[in-house]
Each structure stands twice: as structure tokens, then as C-alpha cells.
Image 1 (cartoon, rainbow, N blue to C red):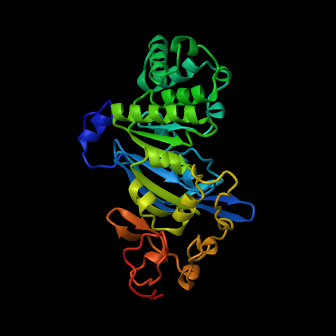
Image 2 (image 1 turned 90 degrees about the vertical axis):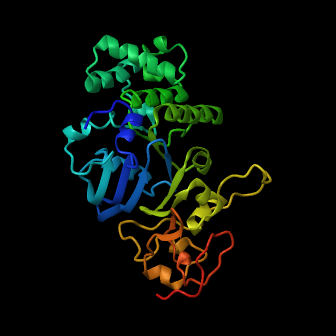
Image 3 (image 1 turned 45 degrees about the vertical axis):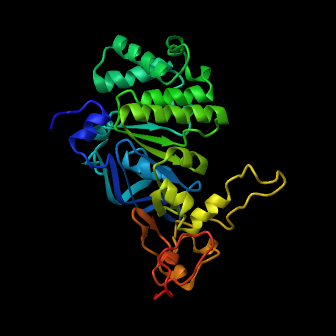
Length: 358
């Protein structure tokens, strides 16, 4: 098969093939006292030109899901127990470090959560971007530095040539995030993983960074996996959304499904916790009571059961599968069982008919 130079060209070679496809991924960490089951059977996919938002509380497994398949978690103590992860049809799990090094930064780029710690403080920004091009594209140092300046200019960093000669400490938070995006785009990857790309940025800079990502996606046709706990960012950026809780996907669908036809009580809880501009200044935000389960010993049933106001007897002992709510929309909740017979205000339940058989 002829090599393709851009995500758009790669997508045209095998139309319909997901840019990234993950099936039943399971990851655990050895720790004092046992093993933490951090990712428990996650399945998701994203097409070229599409944005998948992965949303959930801190510690639910969002970042570990993506970093584990790229070999970016320490092993040990981390370990991939099972599953599959394919990038443009190629299996990633089981590849050696040398093989992954030829893929990371070339076919898949990553914008890390904290750009200050992700960038080398002893190297100039332009040199760090150029290094990627010299290693993966075989450019000379001069060519690579010229391309680095062009990438910084493309990400709307002013006076790009001068900025390329500066060190990370001389950049603001927003500029560091732009520099990370420039580095991740250097080799025109088919998939961009953005891990909390707007964390610690003020609202104006957040808006600029998100708009930059959308603009580049339109030009390149690449897929974006956006990891965040901010539903506002998801609503603006995502085409598809996966809601994660306790190492599992509890709801998955289009952005319209998740926001307007929420089918899992946890999703309702996340939406209720969002700040509302119309709420009185002295009114408290609605928090989800309780805490996530201990993943040293995950519960037999639904992980959200102890925090759910609508939990039934079946929820405590039996883990629900992802049940179809509508085409492309699934929810891991017994309330979506055809015989549930329980109606919940605000919860989309097209299948309620009777009572649980379990």
C-alpha cells in the first residue's frame, strides 16, 4: 500500500476504517495492598475528521486509557491485561518501544495536560519542535528549524521566529499550550490526543486554543480525542462523547445524545454540577454525593450504585452491559433495561416496560 502523507490521504486509502479503535481495553497497576483496576473493558472509536470527547471525574481512567496504549505509562507497575487498540488498522498493543517510537509523534500526536513539565526546560522551543522533524522526517537541522518557525506561526504565536529561540519559561501558559500543539502537529498525525488542553488557562485563552484545534482539524482532516472534565468544552468541540466512570464507559453517543437525551444517572449528575450563568450568585452548585468506588476491589455490580438516587436491588450485585438506547447511543444502566419499569425525571428511557428480571 502506498504511504500517505496526510491524515486526509490516509483516510481515503481505506474509507470507513476508524482512525483509532479500542476494544475491551483493560489496564491495572500493581500497588501495595493489591492491584488497581484502572481501566475495565473500555471500547471506543473515532473517525478521521471527527472529535471524540472523553469526559468524567478525575481518576476515572480517561488519561490512562489513551496513554497505556501508547506505552506512556510505566510498566511495571502498570500492565495491559487485555484488549485491542488499533491506529489506522494497525494493532498498537504488544509493539516494542522501538516500534512505538516510529508511531508516536508521526501517526498519533499528543498534547499533554501540563506543557511546562512536558517540554524540556533546557532546550529552546524551536529546537524541540525541530528535533521531531529531524528524527521522523530526516530533515536537516536548518530545514527543521524553518519548519518549526512555520508551525509556531501557524498556531498563531506572534513573532514566531524570535519565539522559536526562547525557552519554555519565557512563554505564558497559553503560548506553551500552542507550542505543544505545534510540536504534536509537526509530522501531520492522523490522530491528535489532547489531554485537558485548556487546564489552568483563562477563558479567553481557552477559547483561542480550542478554536485553533478546530481550525487545524478542518485543514488536516485528522481525528481528535479530547480528554476533559469540562462539559462546556465537550459541548463545543465534540461530535461523539464517551462518559467514563470508575474505569468504564457508562454512556456513549453523539454530543446531542449526551446533553439532550442523557441515559445514565451519572451523566445527569455531571450536568447538574455544571455552573449556570442564570443561577443566583449565592446558590450552591449541585454536587454528586459520595465517592467513586475503590478500584482495588471494584464492586460486583454498577460502580455508580452507591451514589445513585435511583439504584435498584439488581444494581448492587449485577454489572449491566452497555444497553442500546437509540442508534449509536448506549448506556451502562439497568434503568435502560426493557423491563426496568422505573421512570426517572430527566433520564431518557425509551425502553421502560416492566420490572427487572434479575
